[in-house]
Length: 211
Image 1 (tube, rainbow, N blue to C red):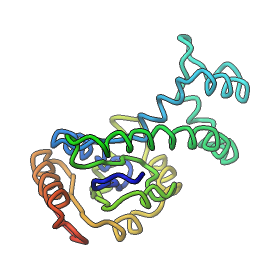
Image 2 (image 1 turned 90 degrees about the horizontal axis):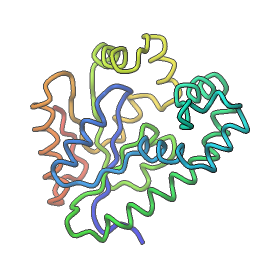
Image 3 (image 1 turned 180 degrees about the vertical axis):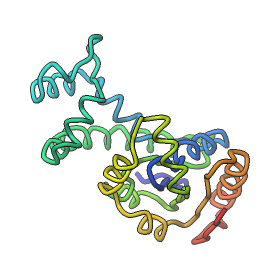
C-alpha cells in the first residue's frame, strides 16, 4: 500500500549536507529513512557478513567481527564487477527494510512527511517513490573541504566518486525545491522549514526555492 502522506527525496552532491537537511526535517517531525543507515544494518547481518568473507576473505571483517567498511569500499570502488556483486546482495534486502518502514510511517498519525535520504536516489530509481525532491546545493570548494575533514578525501577522490553518480545538473533539474548549504546552518534551517511547510500544506508543487 503506498504511503498516504508526502514522500520526499533528498538529492545533492557528495558533501552537500543532505544528512543535515534530513536532521532538520526530522526535528520538524518528518520520518527520515537513511539508505546509509539501512546499509550499515545489512552489513551487520550474519548471512551478509558470511557471504562477504567467503567472497573476499577474512580481511573484510574487523577484529570485533563487524564488517570493515573501509576495506569493502576499497574493493568495490576498484572493481565495478565487485560493486555490482555487492549491490545485488544488499540492495534487495535494503529495499525490503525501506518498504517496511514506509508502511509503518504511512500509518503513523504523528508523521506528516516521509523522507528518503539516499546518495543514489536517482541511480536506484528511488525518486519514483517520491512526491517531491529537495536538492541541496553547495559550492564545490565547500563540499571538498567537508569531505577532506570527514573522510580524508582528495579532490581527485571526490571527482572519482561523483562520476559514479548522475551529474549535479541532472539532479537539480529534477528537483521541486532547492536549498543552499554553504556555511550558515541557521539559514539552512530556515530554508528547510519553509520547504517543509509548503509540502505538508500541499502548496509546494513544482516550486524552486533557491536559497
